[in-house]
Image (cartoon, rainbow, N blue to C red):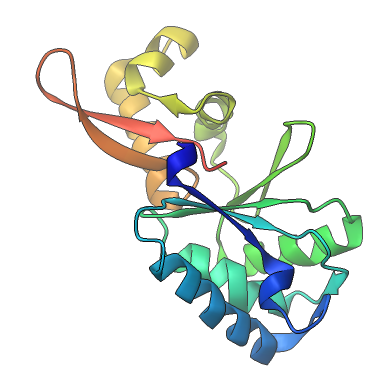
Length: 184
């Protein structure tokens, strides 16, 4: 998946280390959109908050969260280099307002989902999917003791809601099989 990933340092698209308001958020959204459109082969965009000192909640809502919502199911966006708890509060608020799930990946490899949360019924399979680069419904069947149609439905719901990406593949039987990818 690395060949399908693009790293973006958000500060490089901002006028200062502080992101404030709807207007500045929309300006950065336009710049982010240009980056996405100029990288058509990339499916995952890692947004680094390295160097970003402060933002209000409206700035990320109008920039990163709006972009993630727009491309939901087709391209994935995750956050990295976000260690400041005050900054995290505003980004969580922005993701919740847009009803957009987004994964924050920490330096130690752990993660936190901000914004829209998975249903209780889908939380376990999502945690499994976030532990591996790619998962098939058959993998969830063996690891979580689920029936194949149930595992397939859960993964499809997580993809539709923006938690995962997916790609169509050919199953060993010759039929269609979907591969689901974590957004990292």
